[in-house]
Every structure is written in C-alpha cells, then in structure tokens.
Length: 393
Image (tube, rainbow, N blue to C red; front, side, top):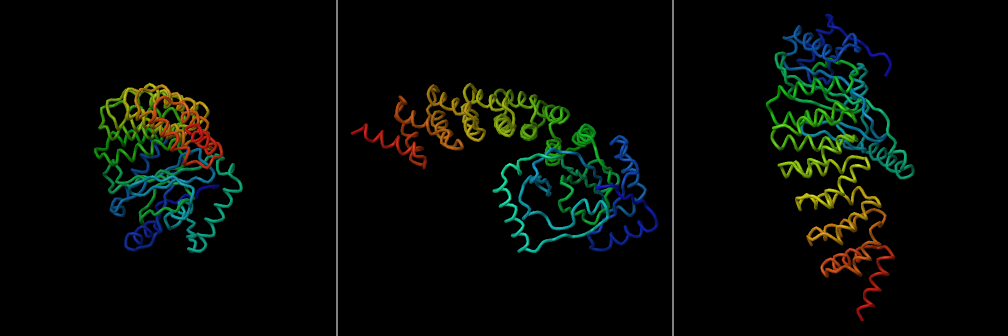
C-alpha cells in the first residue's frame, strides 16, 4: 500500500476523539506505531502505554491491530464476526462499511454496491471461475489483519478479536485503532499465547485458537496448538486445537492428528482430529486417514474416517475403501465404505461397486452396492445392473 500515514496525538486528534465519542460517525482515529520494524511485543507495550495517556478519552475502549501474511487462494477472503471467523470466496454477504485498508490510511471511500451491482459482480465472478477454474486455485500471499478490542485501559484481556483481509469492510465501532504494522508469525503467536494464558473464558480461548490456526504452515502455530491439544484443558478446547491443526499443511500436524484420532481419551477430540486430517493437503494425511479407516480401535471413528476418504479421493483411497468392504468384519463399516465409494468424484468408485455388486460374499453388502449403482448415471453402472438381472433369470 506504499508509505503508511502516521498520525500523532495532536490537539486536532484529541478534538477528533472527542467528536467521535459523542457522534454516531464511523470515523475512527488511527495511530500508527512510529517504527514497525521493532519487536512486536515492544510495539504492543507502546500501544498500551499510548492508550494509558488518553485514559479519559478512551473510556469506551480501543483496538490494537497488526497484520500477518497468509498464503490464500486468489478468490479467498477471511473476516470475523462476534461468533465466527469466516473464510469464503463470494462477496455478496460481506459486512457493509469501509475497507480496513482505507480506514488505516484515513482514506474513507465507502465503496458500497447496490443490490443490482452486487448480483452483477457475483455473476461475473461465477462465470470467471467456470471459464478459468485453475485461476481460483492459485495461491498468493495476502495480508490478514488481527485486531484486538479492549474495553478499558486496565484490561490485559481483549473483549473481542477480529481477523480480516485488509480489503474487507471493517467496523471499528467508532473506537480508535493503534496500528502496529506487519508482524512475523512467531511474534504474533507469542501475543496469542500470552492472551490465552491470561484468559479464563472458554469462548475467548476458542477464538484465540482459531486465530492461531490462521498463521500459515509455521512450526510456531503447530507447536502452540500441540501444546493445547496435549494439555489438561477441557476437551472442547482440545477439540478446537485439533480442528485448527487441520489448517496447517505440515507433516508434524499430520502425525499429531493421526495419533490423536487413534488414541485420545475424548471421542470429540478423536473425531475433530479426523476432520482436521481431511483438511490437510498432504499425501501423508490421506495415508493417515486410510490407516484409521482400516485399523482404528473405535468403530465410530473408523466410520468418520471412511466418510472423509470420499472427500480426499485418490486411487489409493478407492483401493483402501474396497479393502474395507472386502475384509472388514463389521457389516456397518463395510456398508459405510460402499457408500463412500459411491461418493468418490468422477465416478471413480464405479468399477469397485460393480465388482462388489457381483461377487461380494455378503448379500447385504451386494444389495448396498446395487443400490449405489442404481443412483448412478454412469453407463458402466447401467450395464452392470443389466448383467446382474440377466444372470438371475
């Protein structure tokens, strides 16, 4: 964005604070750290000190924010609400207001689109994705802002945390923003670790874990989430840590989730670990899922793994599902694998379903495969059904 404009607490800025405190204007004073190259902890302390100097003016609260770099699809964005952090690629339902980057540079433009223009924009984007499917999959480095809202000067724990790409609209609620500039993942995670330790609220701790999961494929993010996963924290927090590990395309994350899915004391944590593995885009994650599906001790977790295999399909996955259908002793798990074969993309499971429908030793499994073939529009499925019918005459 070029040079960032620095604003100090002059008489004019104090006047702006007073006006903001008594009006419904969306304008917020932005105070930039004078040297964004110093350690983030030092910049954080500076923001708290500067806020302390303006105690009377900041009685309604203030924000401290910085940005990290995240590798994202070209069409992907992130923004937060009070309850959720949302990642999407359709801009129709974004919040209204000024882009964060405009607020930070004090260039308020309010580029709102009419409903008709939003429809046109969405339609154009959909057509572009259809015509250039490879483009939306391209990944680029984007700035993701992390903003912490403090309700008072004395508080060490924020009352809200937001994450957002800087081109997404952001509502600062009329409160000033102390902007610290760019931060390295490791420095940001140190801040999050400290806030997590200081917080006593489960809801807030979950949000911190979600924000930690946004920190790319860094050793630091995996280490932070691993510490929570293997701690004595409530299972709900450990389950959230497992989910966020799924955002880390990292071999250590695969190993952690694989082991946790098989051995953890909590069913919910085991289940979330399976779902985390599903989200990791590494060959080893598929191998781990296959192992859980074939060799897991918990039948319900094995079923979850089988369902997930259909979503991370590969030739290796299809063969593993066929192996479960042929060799597992649990009929319910065998059926689940049949239905997973049906869900494989590009009708990849059809040849396996045909073979199962014709030759499986269990009638109930053959019926399940026949049912799946009947739902398919693939010519091979129709031909197999005709052959089965003729063989019964």
